Length: 302
Image 1: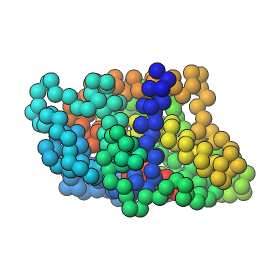
Image 2 (image 1 turned 180 degrees about the vertical axis):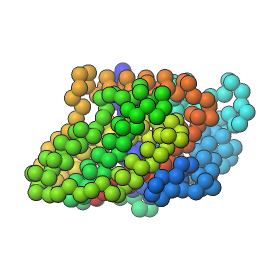
Image 3 (image 1 turned 90 degrees about the horizontal axis):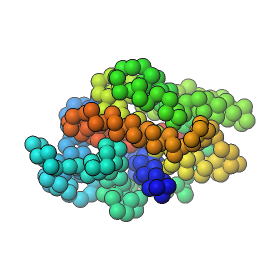
Image 4 (image 1 turned 30 degrees about the vertical axis):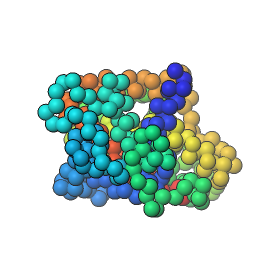
C-alpha cells in the first residue's frame, strides 16, 4: 500500500514538475479567459479536441501531448454505458492522473508518456538557480495558494467546502519562508505581479464559471507539489540555501502527508461522482492549462 501511495503521488507530481521546460514550452489554450493573456474560444476548442483524442474521443486525431495517434477506446460521443475512460474504474483521480501522464515524454514516463520532448527542455542538472529568482518563485507561488485557499473557503460552489483545511494548504508556510528568506539574505520580497498573480486571477475566474475545471488545477497543483515539488525544493536548497528545509515543503499536521493525500483523493473522487460525463471531460481537458501556468512559475527559479 505504501508503494502504491508513493507511485500515485509521484505520478501526479510529474504532471507539472518532472521537466520544467517540457511543461512550459507548449502553450495550451483554455476555455475560460483570464485577466492576463486569455485564450480565444476558437483556440480553446482546438485544445478540447486534442485532449479528447488522447482519451479515445478523437478517432484518429493526434493527442494533445504531441506525438502519435490517439488510442481508440471505443467511447466516442454517444457511446454506451459499458464504455469507460482509462482509469475510470479506479475513480476520477485516476482519470486525471492518466491524462497528465500522457502529456509526458517517454523519458519521463516510459510506460505512459506520449509527448515529444520540447526543444527548449532544460534538464534540472543544468539549472542555475539564484536566491533572487527563488524568492520571486516563493512570492508568486504564495499568490496562487492564497487564491486556492480563498476560493474553496468562499462557497462559490457547494463542492468547494470539502476541500477546506485538507492539510495541504501552503500559504501560511510560504509567508514564513519569505520572511526568513528576506531576513537571512537581506533581500526585499518583490510584489506578486508575474505568473503567480496571473494564475491566481485565472483561478478566481474559472472557479466561478466552471468548478470542474477549477478542480483540475486544485488536483494538479497540490498533488504535484507533494512529491515533485519536494524533489525540486531539496535540489534547490542544496544548491543555494545550504540544505535549509523550507515550510513550503513540510506537512506537520497530525497524520502526516500520506493521510492528507488519502483524504483529499477520496474527496475528489466523491465530488466527481456528482458530475456528468461532460463535466468530467471538461475537468480533464483543463490539464494542459494547469501544466502551462505551473510551468511559468517554475521557470522563475532558474
